[in-house]
Image (cartoon, rainbow over all chains, first blue to last red; front, top):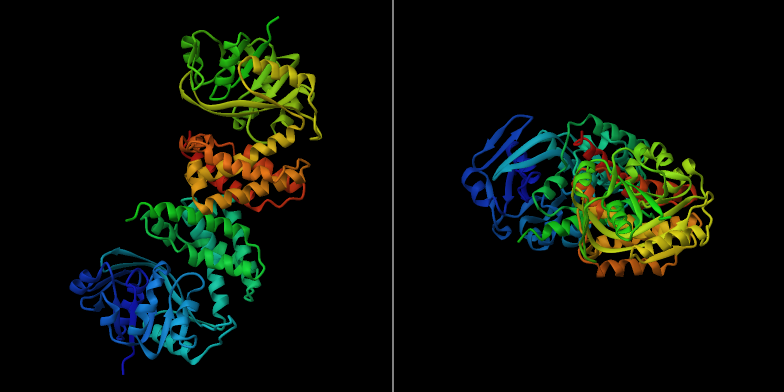
Length: 314
Length: 314
């Protein structure tokens, strides 16, 4: 039988990966909110550097209770909307189905494990530049590869389980490069090494990644923040080799000028994923004995900005 | 003979204090740059909460070499313009005259002492809300009291010298409340306790003082920054009582919503006094063994913003 997917959140990430899974022949069901009627009437369009395509008819729902229970649920909500998960998840995934936490930052596999148990929870990190170009329209700018790892309650390496290989197979079939992580925690912290400085400083300093790298003061600050992320990771039992910092800075030097999705959220007065990318890592680092003063300062600056912007929303 | 003053820099601070000294009957000579012709033709106007007044004719110069040598030189340039001092000072102050460094932050008495020798250098801290409302027009919003202290080369307390009492007398006669500082270093660091968090965060977070105090994250960050300033002060031999932090936060709670002069400079694309208020204190603290990570981060953020804004200037 064809594997079925429930895509929980049809935005820049869920819309893109879900459409690619559907194009590859999987049975994909999309949960959408603001774009529901548009997608129901017009389907999903993907403008991609790998080739544009349209899915004129997709299975789309505006209520999780009307969705079929699928083999795999893919959580692509913004983490700021995660409070809806306890009421969504049980209706959209089979009792023995897998749940992929395809979200930014730290701490959400844990929440999902409380709902469905730890064994069925996998973390998926996506390395992708995509955004929503309009209702039901996804623009895929660059990258797209993912890393899959097994969640464990105590944060120990979950190893390369058969579940990981199963999920890797689906995404490979959909045309993505897939890496499997022996230790999901290390993978998540490694992603934070890039995300913390560039997402945070892009908002606070109103800058693209190339601007941050070109100025000696922001470049130095990015490196200092990366060091703190690595110290936090090590304190939490996920050591990262020091050369990784240089690698991330050099990698960013080669990227085209890039406005982070956190900065796009901020400029559009949408909630930023401050707890996911900053609050949870800072608290995890400090609970394990790391001090993380710079990360904490950036966290507080972003909380201020996020709460100020909130006043402009309804 | 009537005491003569050379006001070096006729802006929000020099224009205000100089005009008040002139109104009190002292012989005041103003060095001006952009406003020179206007002040020559129309004099100086002060709109003040203590009462408006106009000086229709003042002694104003656009070239220090044409000024008389005065008993007291008052440096009210922005610290970002201090490189002009070695060529200005010798022409505007008598060989035994006093030089008042009436500037923000740390490290400038030292520069002036290299030009005129340490004994003749006094530091003056002004606690004033004033700005330039137009050419030759100063708006005085609040406060105005000053603190005077003797500079010493080794940073040790200079005591209450006869020179301090002399200067205090002049400013008292001009209607200002004057405090005398036994230890200029402690006075300067104490002013930084307020200036570092509120000036810095007002720019980075685009906020007034009341907004920074109302949000729990920025309020906490302000306190954490104040603690670091106190640690830096103590490392430099100028301990500040811990209760002073609470006092500064509560004092700010009672202030009317206030946009710092650093934020006004930033918004007008003028150079900010980043080295004076951040760079010099951070280096002084670190040279004395304090770590000051938050101050250094704020310094780097401000350097980035200052250098970006510089691109918009000529």
